[in-house]
Length: 328
Image 1 (cartoon, rainbow, N blue to C red):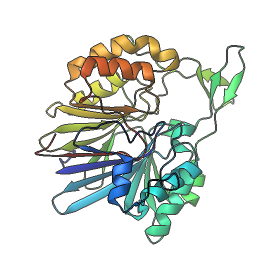
Image 2: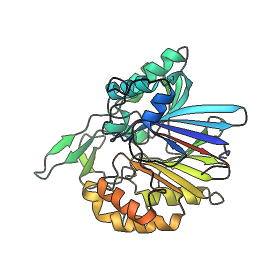
Image 3: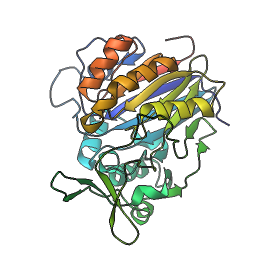
Image 4: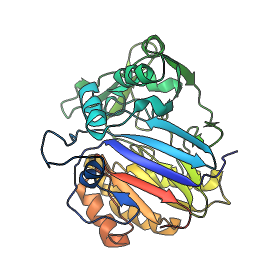
C-alpha cells in the first residue's frame, strides 16, 4: 500500500545540465535562487554546482508530522556528487534509504562515497539499499567494429555492505519509509516501439558477453501527492518511458499520473522513437514532465513543441521541485 503524502520536495544533486537563467514554473526553484536564499552573497563559480553526465536526486516526503528522505542514484563519480552536496549545503544525515535505479556507472559512481557521507552524519547507522540482483552484472557497449567497450561496474553487495548499506536485493516491488515511497518490480515491456537499448551487452555467469537491450534490472520510483497524483521517477527509462508510465498507471489505477522526473533516454540510437514516444505520452495526462539527463536535445525540443513550456520543466543540477496539495 502506497500512502499519500502532503508535500514532496525533489532536489537534483547531479544532472547533465546546469540552467539557472531560464524562467521556470512556480513549483520549481533554480540553483542560483536556492543558493541566494541559503546565504550566497556573491555570485561566483566558487559557489555553484557542477554538471556531469548522470543523475541523482534527494527526495523528501511529508505526511502530517512524518518526514522521510531518500536518495535516488548518485551520479557518475564521487567527486561530482560530493562537490554538489557541499555547494548546496545538503545534510545527508537525513537520508534514510537509497534506491539505485539500474546498474549503470553514471547512476552509481558516487554510491560508496554517498554512504560514507550519510553515515558520517547519522551516527554510523546502516542504510537500507534497494537493488535488483541483475544490477551487479558487468556491462559493455558494442562498438561498430565489434569490440566491447566495458562500463565501470557498479559497487557490489560486499562493497556496499562494507560501507554500511543494508542491501535489499529483490525483483519484487517494495514500499518503504512508512509506505510513503514505492519502488517498482521489473517493468513490463508492452509498447511495440520501445525495444530497449541497442548495442548494450552484459556478461553471463560463465563470463561471456550476451545482448542485453532490455536492462531488466531498471525500476521506477513513485510518490503519491494528495490532490495531485503520482510523481514517477525514472532515471534513464531504458524500458521506455511510456512502458514506465503505463506500468505505474496500472499499478495505481485509481491515482492519476501527475509528473515524471528523470532521464527519458531518447538520444543516440533511440532518437528514432521520439515521435511515437511523444504521441503516446499525450494520452497519459501528465501535468509536469521534468526531463533531463539522457533525454537529449532533440527529444526536449519535441516535448516542448508538443506539451508547451509549462508542462515541460527540465531538470538541472541544483534545481528543486515542490509538489503539494493546493498548488500546481
